[in-house]
Image 1 (cartoon, protein in one colour):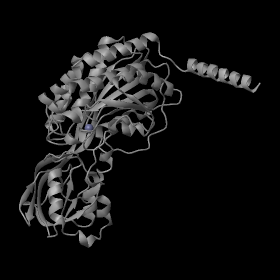
Image 2 (image 1 turned 90 degrees about the vertical axis):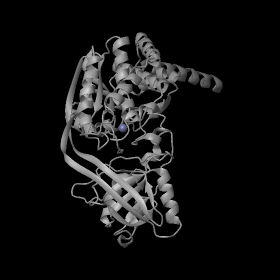
Image 3 (image 1 turned 180 degrees about the vertical axis):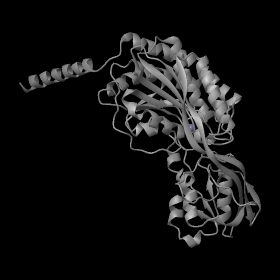
Image 4 (image 1 turned 45 degrees about the horizontal axis):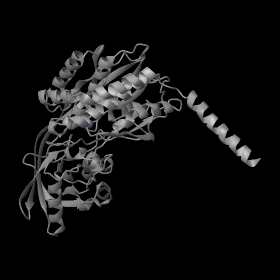
Length: 475
Ligand SMILES: [Zn+2]
């Protein structure tokens, strides 16, 4: 009797499971077939690579607010129009701007040695001729914050914290605070200047720039990052015990606010044109290198994915938009302007996903969508699996930095996590150039975005807005 009951219960649970599977929203067979066709075409296509080559060669680096920013916006409008999108337009974003003039960091005593350096974005300049003083070294930002002011006043602060290499780039968030807020922290204790070990993983002599944050009215001091081998050298010298002196000479300007543009292109949906799958990347870059991995690669990946859908699929049911954001690097200004302009319309956004982590292969998909939509993400993952992409699960996916300001309001988002093992060797350096991109890896990215965007646009259910994001972002 007991055995019979157990069998009956087992049979019921199988039936129950099957019923649940039948009730879960399903794609139509032809929609899945199209996803597979898009995947195959994208893997054979060089389009993403060619778009990135064109941007980084024709325009070069694209610091927000620079002449090249305007040239890049013009390039993007023409490129998207030439690719045949239904609509291409721009939306403004206004932000403060900063110009690098020069930087020179040198050890002056007990030996003389020039250090490879880059000023940090929004660093003020030093007085004419620079500053020269004894250096005081700290393990990290917290150690500087905890130090008595008299140990710091009149000195040059050096923060030696080392970024760890990781596939998911997690070493960045653990290290970047010294760059983001170190200048303000050192200014509070009347230091003359701040030098940090580069937030990067390279052992080559390239310094990694990036932006600093500042509160209105707060005091900042001149700040620069030195290359990692130079940071090693400085640290060894300090540990030998003799006082070490540095000179720091930075020329830089904070300029009047500038208005750039988010450049947006749309494939208008056939059935629900007001519903939008948003693919993002940022058009601006740092003023060094040519902004190839950050984020010329993302521009190529999402633009090519949308173009391949236009060419090889029927018109999607929902609209697909490519959004090339302005001024990400200096403070997510394009993403913030976009969120301000569109947050009242958030329920019309089906899904957001930004590519802003180079062109390393995508290894995982995660998403933040409503309960009802969650099984659809599983069905999309099934079509991504042959690209080597694992299911990362239901997470605090933010959809990328530029979607973060809208994700806070509950924008449904997916992260296609890229292998970032090598990304921080080049990030924000003179060495971020087109040769660092592998065309086959980039094609895998394009395939993943094409499958995701197509199926999200055809989904039997709206993805809805899940709970708002709770994390914060670093540029
Ligand atoms: Zn970026």
